[in-house]
Image (cartoon, rainbow, N blue to C red; front, side, top):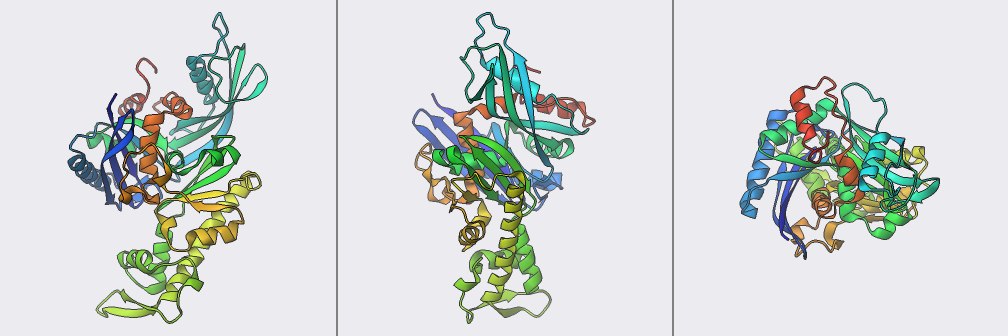
Length: 416
């Protein structure tokens, strides 16, 4: 059986679109596009018209490459407008034979999200950590088991509804229907984490342009998620301030000459900077660039690890930390993390995933982890996706009936 799937990842600095063909042999990427964007701040869309135009450019590019249209798409979501919390759901099993079904799993997850949230917020994901069947704890796959009562310990994620509406508007106006909304941290984790890491405990950190997406995995499942409003843009901004250079120049310097380790850079090496005004180019010590980048990289990592400690997970992450996202490609970033965090650290790349057929070298980059993870989820459809399809809160909450109708399309046929 052959099916065409699409992925859209709208980040703070770039929009990535993919079209792939899924066959019995695996996933074959037919087209890929990455377009710069400036209409997103810390994961939230702040200029709908600009982002829509950029998204349409990315869609046109990927469709030309793939030779086919982008239809329904798996779409990532991130940003400081997301909020996560935990809750418990409990139901009784009414079947005559007391055998737990997938419908029972949906019902117990719906029970878990029956909780008060602020007005104009929508629950967008319900992640089952573990199930309890008649007091038997630690159950990960309850379907097929016998029992009278089913309980789930769930991690819930909510989004500001207006921010969600802006995301949907950009996509729908571009002629694309949202097939599935997926947390960016879970998509990138799907692309770069190894099974043993998920089992023993690992922190996946996707450091993008405006945010860092965190996902903690324990006992083989996603356990906790968070979004830190810090990313590669902070590095670029500091370089621009420190060297008195335009943002575009600062970004180029970061990519071409940057290092997060000062001791890797010769104190005599110089780089040219195109500054403001009529002064033209001037020369700076490359080590000064590294000093700026190392200080900000350490600040980002320190902030992330502080969040992990506050949640009490720092002592149980046996597999350590897996870094991914475009920012971690900065020279020395992983080394700084190993030194600061004192846990195993590696850079996660999609190249290890066997599901992809002849994945181009250009896509074997941490920058494509989220988008490729969306394709993997479209193929694998793990249990948390089943949960997510049925956990949207469709109360209009003041955002308008049209938006509610958009969200209802995420539900399987016949559910409301």
